[in-house]
Amino acid sequence: MYKSFQLLIFQIIIVLITLISSLAFSEDLRIKINSGQVEPLPIAIANFTGEDGGSSEIGMQISTVVSNNLVGSGQFKAIESAAFIAPPTNPSVRPNFMDWTPLGIKALITGSIKNINNQQIEVEFRLWDVIAETDLIGLRLSVNSRAWRRVAHIISDEIFERLSGDSGYFDTRIVYVAESGPQNKRIKRLAIMDQDGENHQFLTDGSFLVLTPRFSPTSQEITYLAYFKNEPRVYIFNLETGQQELLGSFPGMTFAPRFSPSGEKIIMSLAEKGVTDIYTMDLNNQKVERLTKSPSIDTSPSFSPDGKKIIFNSDRGGTQQLYIMDSNGRNVKRISFGKGRYATPVWAPKGELIAFTKMLKNKFYIGVMSPDGSGERLLAQGYLVEGPTWAPNGRVLMYFKQEAPIDDGKSASVNLFKIDITGFRETRIVTPTDGSDPAWSPLLPN
Amino acid sequence: MNKKIIAIIGAVSLLSACETASQKVVTGTSATSGSASTSSSVDKKKSLFAAAKQTKAEKLIAVGDRVLFDYDSAKLDSSAKILLDAQSRFLRANTDLNFIIEGHCDERGTREYNLALGEQRATAVRDYLVIQGIDPERIKVISYGKEKPAVVGSNTMAWSKNRRAVTIID
Image 1 (cartoon, rainbow over the protein chains, first blue to last red):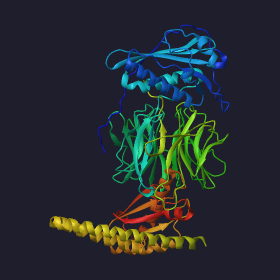
Image 2 (cartoon, each protein chain N blue to C red; image 1 turned 90 degrees about the vertical axis):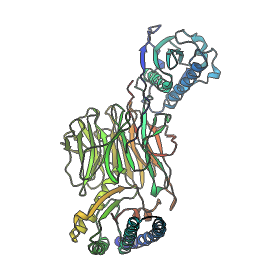
Image 3 (cartoon, each protein chain N blue to C red; image 1 turned 120 degrees about the horizontal axis):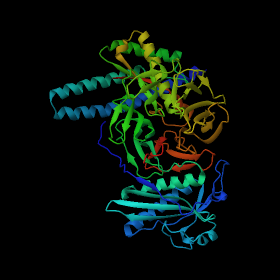
Image 4 (cartoon, each protein chain N blue to C red; image 1 turned 180 degrees about the vertical axis):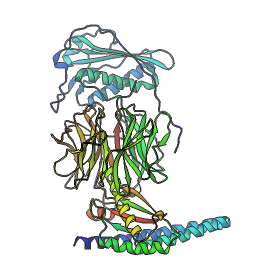
């Protein structure tokens, strides 16, 4: 069970650069995302300049990742660099805006890479409002050159935040269950990757079944269900040490774990003698608290971001529906009243929505509703779609989708997908093998 | 009407279970003869024990190792109870053996809910066997939810065979 394992975590020092001009930026630069499908904002991402071959290569790669992130969000359109009139400039130099306006470009990103020593580089970038002819942000990041991808994600988040008015979600990771083998003898392994699929690593070797991994608020631990020695129990995986630790000692199966927003507790289900209820365990003092006491199935609990409420699903009313209760288990109230069964509720990072899985007439759906149960919207559907997880800014959901298995066939493909909460732009996340049970990390700590 | 269909499906799944069991026996004996020719008497005893266990497992399958459930239900119907009556006679006749009851679900439910439902199904079987006089100390339950389908397929026949509780020798 224990494996020596370490994910590379580099310290990144970020410094704000003083802006050259302090004019307000032009109104037409701000993207309005809430109105559904938006007209992507045309931007230019110049290749980050370098001092030599190595740093120029890193500069080009950073520009590419920034471009992929921003374009992938659906909010931006990157103008081909072949169309650029002017060569890339150093971010400390005020560009000639006349070179960019004819291309219809509204925002320009320039950057540079400096070698500090063998390992450290200094990345600088500036975002320019081409219309108002002013700079909007500038950052200088000192980092190990091997962490250039994270630098690209941090820069993408800064640009996204400045132009969309919403926080970014690029400097994040996905933990999920990598699947292989025939459907009735599936091998499942924990795996982790950057939000864009890069830096993929397996965390477990497939010798035991693992399910439903979820990140801690610091993104440094993962709680999940493992069938280690054929006893299904909740474990915690520490990403820094690679250690996997059994959570508590319970007489029955513990499952459906999630961290509380403070990271101090795990909320989960315990199934014993045919009864499944919801419990919390305090990670500091191991204190266990039972929150529901119904003879029905109460599972898939998820805390509200302020930690005061819990949403879960229960079949106490006959079929699976969504219920909300206080964090001490009081004031249980059903919130889902639509047709069908509702499951796997997850509270949005900002609290305004609940994402869920819905089953209706042999179809599965991913949807969202308000915490009071109003405003249900279905976003994705399929033979089987399940287990939504929120991007930290609450604008994108990831989930998994399984195709219908061919009768007596060996496998049915299962893949990770993401979709904007507007319901547009469903995109498959490419993984080395099949994948399910994704969980999106919060923005990584610097 | 509904129950009749379930009973028929039960019989079909028993047949298919027998097929897989006989395949298992073939691999079992070849492994046994292989190890016996090369190793000590302790290993021989072990392999003899394994072979005996194998035969018992075969017998359990012949008696009926699994019961099926309706969609989203952990209720034992009358055909399930008849099968479990026979199963409990087998368990009583083999006091040296312990058992694991595995609860399973079809794939038409969400993962976590199905883990709970599988536990309910396994527990329903366990409780019935305990009422029939089987020592609860001899029985363990485990739920696999929808993780280990008996039949792969996207039709009602496959799903009904996957909604099951299977008794195996520990």
